[in-house]
Image (cartoon, rainbow, N blue to C red; front, side):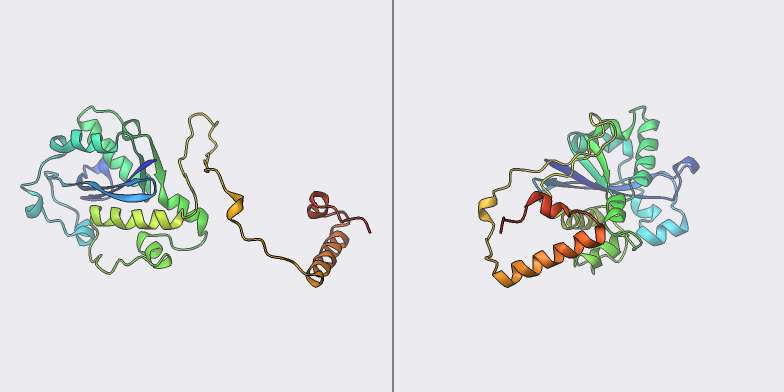
Length: 237
């Protein structure tokens, strides 16, 4: 399974106000391993960045003045993402900008160019409700060093997000979100599991008696029979 972790930097917050993409970074994950393949480019937006945005990414107008424009790199970019499930942190922000760039060239919408989009921010919020789920916060939570991240950068942030994503989904064979054939329900595919590798731990009589006493207490509290007893009936005395 191929994923592409993507991040952008922009001149501001709203493409409807003429703000542009100035950096794209993509990192490839295949079979849950980060590969050596990546896509990265700076882009000349033909405008200045807002002061607030400039403080975040530090990409000055002078630095970007000799860089290619989006139309010069669009084919290479689309080739890189075309068969991948694209992972983006706060996906709607980046997609709005990429859609605006593609619309200027009459190249359609971003979601039509890849196998699917996964919002890692939404996934993090489901795993950690009520907590901060910024990329920096997730790096801290999962023990991923971001000490070298002084300013935001699309490629660096993609590399960090790739590590965060693998940490968040550790133990899951596939997290492809397929909304096409399941009526809007997310599907998760798991590989075959070999139960023979499990270690069998013997249980002594005292543990069994304590377990039965606990189940009896559950029966009394629920005024019925626990599912455990239905699945594994007590042996006849």
